Image (cartoon, rainbow, N blue to C red; front, side, top):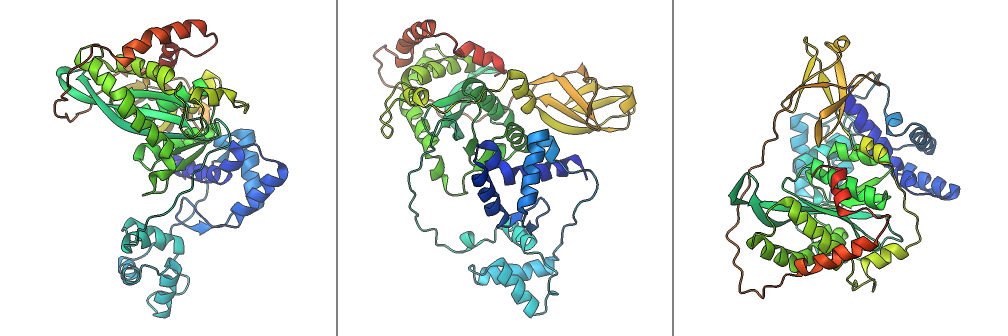
Amino acid sequence: MDEKMRNEIALFRYGLIAEVVSRELQKGEQAQRFRDIASKKHVTPYGEKQTVSKRTLERYLHLYRNGGFEALKPTRRGGYAARAISQEILDKATILKQERPERSVQQIIRMMELAEWVKPGSISESTLSKQLRKRGITRKKLSKSSSSRSFRRFEFPHRNACWQGDVQHTLYLPDPTNPDKKRVAKLFAFIDDYSRYIVHGQFHFQEKGAQLEDCLFKAIMRCGKPEQIYVDNGSIYRAKSLEITCAKLGIKLSHSTAGRPQGRGKIERFFQFVDTSFKPEAYDLIETGRISSIEELNRYFYIWTQSIYHERTHGETKQTPIQRWEECEHPTISISFTDLQQAFYWEEERRVDKTGCISFQGNKYEVDQELVGEKIKIRFDPHDLEHIEVWFNGKQMNNAKTLNLSRAQHEKATYPDEVVLGEKSGLNFLELSEPQYEKKQKKKRGTLSYQTLMEDKTI
């Protein structure tokens, strides 16, 4: 069994116990939760639907609490064989589903068995369901009844119970490599569901997993560990590196249902406020040259968040986000910088060549000669490719030595039409807020400053 599958199985096991790990439950509540989980079928990494006993769930919890995420990985022996479905049978199942979208996969299998197209028990329900989904053959897509649904307003009971996260393509800045062109600046943000407090928000030019995890890292450093983060189904939110990081930290990672973004309404409303309050003022400073870099944009955004957004009374809570956050008595869980950094390390496998070197992201590294010909695991901070940890058979070896480090390639960007602005008063809300922000910061003690926050991880 390769490392990728071992990770998949560990993530599956963690997903079963995530709610119990991330929250402190009474013994009776924990037992009831495990009974509920054991009563349902779950899709395994092999595409099979199966139940998991309460005793097995308790064993997974014991393993995790004693050995962390690594303890949930199975031994390298064994595995399961996936059940294949022939193209002909899959085509017939597709026709049966298209004829009547309300037919369940179980019903379709039974119909094919009765028609003697397949032998009884030869087709797995979960495997057929997975193959039909890959083809886009689902009840929702086939039936045109996407009727409107009502959604109840929901709020988590305390701070750090849940953070909503998302990315917004906010505005355009001069391209660092060519000031005559413009490049989109993307705002990564996490908002606390209970208080509407922005635990961290930051602009990046790139929209990749490294930038997302950079934002989450700083949010946890600043505000403590959340019990759950709630995001959409974009590829960066489905990355294995993010799933593994959350599993190591004991955070439940949840994704909104496709086509139903209403569950992330709080972060969407925040972005709307960014559009109406921050964006016009920022464009004013961009046009006059007072904001010309991503660093300057982030500084003014931080000032705007602390001085404007967090001090504004929210229409539903009737409190400011900072007031609601600080008045909540629920304790925050802090994590040391070193432990947090370790949890955010990415992992990949590489084969050591005959010269004792590995290639990674266009760079060349030298490892211990005793590893020649072996498959090793490397652990690294995606923002710092000069320092690469080397692991072999669960043991940490000497770090890899950098032989050459290539420059990162800049992304290609599309450019908007020129922004047309009308007459101005000469005043700018962000600039007016800056002196008040600086004055307030001098009075504060023991808080994480903007500069310290930005230096924790590279922008």
